Length: 426
Image 1: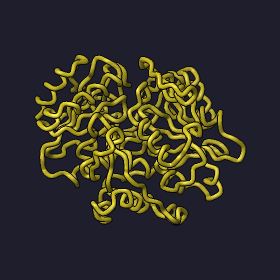
Image 2: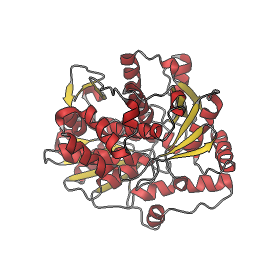
Image 3: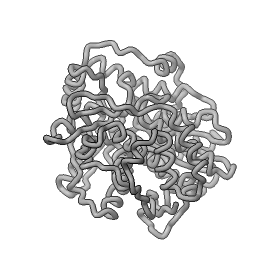
Image 4: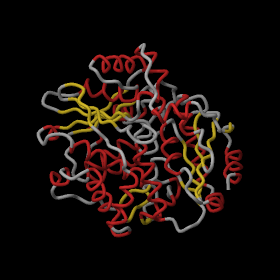
């Protein structure tokens, strides 16, 4: 598998290089130079989750890893389901929160950890990543205790839910968590600065586990196929998928699944008040505004890193951006949708509720709607309890970490201070 840097096309790397390197020159994202196609999608959808995912990822990676190696990576990473839950006639929730950290990012985080171990040449590795909530936990748990790998996770201080924070800031060992005085975009900017420092990259073996890493993105393609596999052939003929979108890795993966042949009529990009992309699709003007804190904090991103990949894919496939559905949802509207779903018998949290609301508004007669539920409602217990007047029970992983001490250190929004942390953890 060859990948190229979207910003500097002459930089071409292998899958292993892309996984180890994370970003290309000039902070460019890597993108596959060619995409495989599958002749018989129905036969592929008839296979079980792990077998199907192994075939998809092996076709993407090519002969760099054997089919047996890829199958082993997938078996180790995908040890939990991605079930559909029918909410009402013609509308389904895809539940992506049945992994160890109760969020969709378990799929990408665990596959990346397995991939990095497979392509590592034995040198020191420092994973540096920014999180707006769920990435931190998924990455921390995926890499926890792995030899010769240190993980440094930046997150916006006071801007993620307390239970999200507890889930990854209580581990210790090779997991180092840093509360930055700023928003997620500030954390992401620090990560980019670190990757632009060639000496630092070399000294600490820098790598990123954000959705900018191609291995995470590739893993996410697989659960879109798994969703379609759980629908009847008739239902998936007019399938519309609504994706709660922050950094836009999830939507990128869905569009890549479509490019591989998955029958999806259209996708919807659903955001909160941080609506850079919906406004761009409406006006053609890229105009990020300061990030606003919302109850759907994992989507509090005003400069989504993965958007260039979506534009690149649309260019290659000659898909007009105007074919993407879009919608921005306020906290008040999100709360209303949490209540509506609860009345339908489905417990949801703000991120999934945003995807549901935009889907419900735009779904047409004869279409089957699917919205992504990216985190367990208990991860946003305070918000959901307040909306519903209920007391959500904590699943075992959250209850365990809720009682543990935070191990994070505070950091000013300052690159030199971050460099000191990165050298310190070696």
